[in-house]
Image (cartoon, rainbow, N blue to C red; front, side):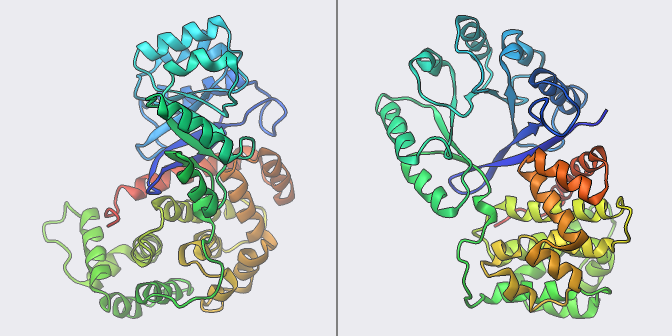
Length: 410
């Protein structure tokens, strides 16, 4: 039986990804096999932590796991090393004596505990000394009210970390940061901060020129070499990256042409989307680039599973460019005009139309753990949900492996 999960990044004030919340389908009314919260949590733990000892889909970062009432009462987290994950106490848990004893035991055993979707009530006050993180859902708890709670506890010397959930815009991120939140969860990082036409920096223009070349059916390596050679920093990153991948070679790769030929078309596209874009806009969060890559891989692999004829390279480019407006802070329509993309890719990126648009909407729905939309799109695309789930999980593991071969962002 397959695992059905999505992951959502948790970022700090510098927009660095410090972990991922792993979201299993959350109840019997969702689209996947009808199992309850307890079994969902147990399956997620068994599939992702028990066999491997660490989680392959969090890129070595912290995993935030939801635990229902019964799992906590039965001390299920004690079956796993205390550094494996952060225990999220679901908002549906009853704050009774039995739960408090379990929380105390886990706290004293060294586990990190978080109160999920927290709403301050007198019943939860006695739990606060034993938790490390409190999560507020900004769609439920106004930032101003949460900020008052944070200040009141900080004034008392509390060392609790506060996490803002469902942060959807950069303005919300800034307001939550000013209110005292330490961590942030939501897709604010994957939306353009300035949706208006503006001049691109030279490094961003270099990236756009590279994008033009890798968008063509056949990559012209000579043209790519000339573009990369105009930028010293980018040239260094290319050689550094390729030599990291080929450390077993007796003689290191020392020329652009050698590097490009070694990479080949497929790996070159991966290199450009991460290294070149992160070089172009260095203040963007790392999660943005890996989300682009993960969507590209997911779209490429899923296109090969559909019963209609879809160019997998077009599918890859659709996923790859789905966040281009966020990376360069320009309207997607203006950017697409500058790229040699086929009509189906353009329609998918601008209007989410066609089979490619359906795949992209499915990727976005999975990122957001929108199981109802996933079910509807699977029916429209005539594909089994288990195939989609496995493809998504594979794309997460793939991007984790790819991440390990890349140079660090400056």
